[in-house]
Length: 414
Ligand SMILES: [Fe+2]
Image 1 (cartoon, protein in one colour):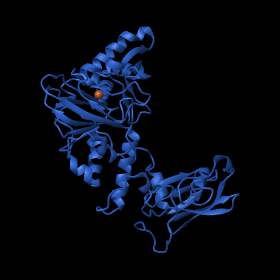
Image 2: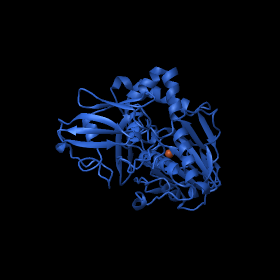
Image 3: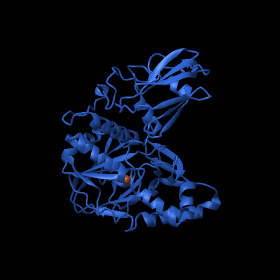
């Protein structure tokens, strides 16, 4: 039973999710002229509930199914004339009567409060991104790898750092081929691409990617040639005995903020002029068109499309092309500058995770004749990481620490 629930409340009203809500008792309710209700709490918070939205979230048949906890009311069966003609408070819960149905329904006040405060929004329970420059870090925030593999609490802390700073590292992991997959499986479903579910980064005599050479790679993002480039990348170092080959990271959001504040005309070019990217080999032909900095809906994740080997064609009027090249060159200078870019060693057993759509990563050139450099990587979509962070927070807030978080799909509703 949630904290503060009245003793007389034997059964908590069903909510369309798997959360346990505090019993945030509603203080008053009034019916509005359009058939909805306005709910008020003691601290002055108010929530205007539309009758149609409240009706389809009503527990029970023709609303929230107790098994799936999803709305089973087909939109064509929703009576658009639905109105709330009577509403009152019972033990702090909202009770409304829907007409013309003539049905009374009780709503959980904690769930209503949660929605009133925007707790249902996609980013509500995720860490807020913090922009960083090279003065803030010398290397990514670092955790012990075996602890992340074994402890849900440490996994949660590591992922919080990953979302906050866009990068987080593990050290001391086994230098075996399947380690990167084992870590990724702690988070979610791996994203397969034409490079495979997991893939090698090593010098290839017949490379289909610049990554598999010994060339230096400036600040870039992977697979800008995709409609939705991979959200997160995990790179694990199995062996590194070469001279050179240091890793680099730049916070794209910090660079974007710099341009927005200091060089707004460059920011405008980077966010509006589009390019066509392509990623092709004998078996594949991926193409997508977008700006270098795609702000999406204005909220993270922004998508940085920055990798010259797969940027093929300007997708803009001829008259804009020179300025668009100028803007990209400014981005290259700033993203690879000492002010914004960190450079650090990548040692065997290290695994670095980063937001591929926010962080511009790279490496210095290395001498492939001086030794062996072998990395193994994988991708996860943003959705997988966000979901795991939300579930970890929900789980750790309500469960004893000695019980492991279920990872198998079939166990997740247990
Ligand atoms: Fe890369």
